Length: 431
Picture 1 (cartoon, rainbow, N blue to C red):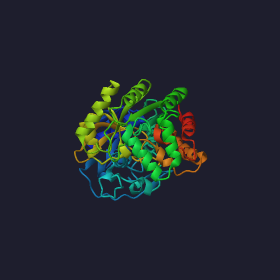
Picture 2 (cartoon, one colour):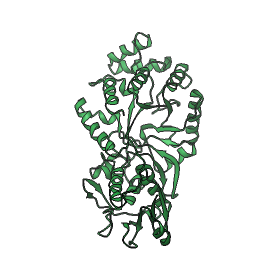
Picture 3 (cartoon, rainbow, N blue to C red):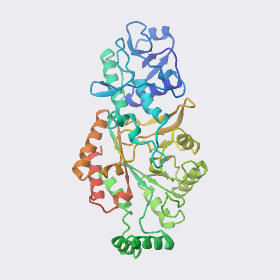
Picture 4 (cartoon, rainbow, N blue to C red):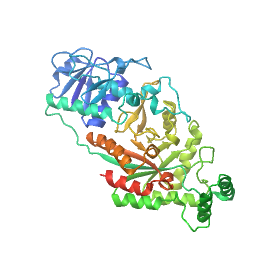
């Protein structure tokens, strides 16, 4: 066991040390504020405080892990080798930056508490993020810092034990609209035809009529193909279905439609099925609980995983609501229109609630890419160049490479054949 001496054990300190050592590095860790216990410990040990005790492995602490609430932090970016970093520690420290405080800053989403301009959907925009502004959004810097740290520790403590960890790939399929034309009812179907005619979308009118007359399969109904594809490549995959009432931003099939229920049940027979929470339930916990309960009744399995419509997260209220609705895991941490690592990591982590100064019982699983972020590219070559760079970053730290695709985009008719491209992506990155 690695023992850490510090002058004060706070919730922030405990939270980030367990994340870095246990979850990222696979190292058992303990804490103490007693000098005598630290001196007696015969195994690997470090001091994390303002001054070293003697000649031990020492990391000078930044005040962040010992503060309360949100303060006006002055952050100056620098470089640790080829990796951006901040919170320098000075010459006496064995590590040039306080990576624990820096990691807490990123994982807690500290910057989202600071006043910023939200986008149209009330989200924290990627252009507001420090990672984008300083050019490290495509790097899981928290994991990279941890790897640099363990390398230094093993130089000092060759017997330091570390549990092995392998790179993983998971494909998330977001189903907020299961069908483009089918199962929408006479009224909604008629309105759709009328709007297409008004907009002179004659090809879409023909496609709609072919689907409704059952001469052609609905373009968004690609679930059997996706299940077969995942099985072929042995890929870990998850489907998130929206199961909500119709609204301005929620336009899925009626929850009363038996064909829709049958679809969800059939997918749940082969893959994990969880809730894509509706836009309307964002600040309505009763509605969120109802959607969760209704989906549970359809698949006859507990629903504890969730994704939020448009990856819409409002720190900290969103995660408090998810905890209140008894969700255990969230898969919304990432930017919709930009690839990269929003929280600076490719390792799952628990949400730390800064105003309450507690770790909330919900685990956040960050994704590196949402399919909408790929629409700006003109070719497969450009897409794979971007994805290869992201994957290599994740592979370097044996992290978790998570992607989000929607059945909607995969079934759309555009310049790229998205379902074929998706097949190539899954084949390329599955492990």
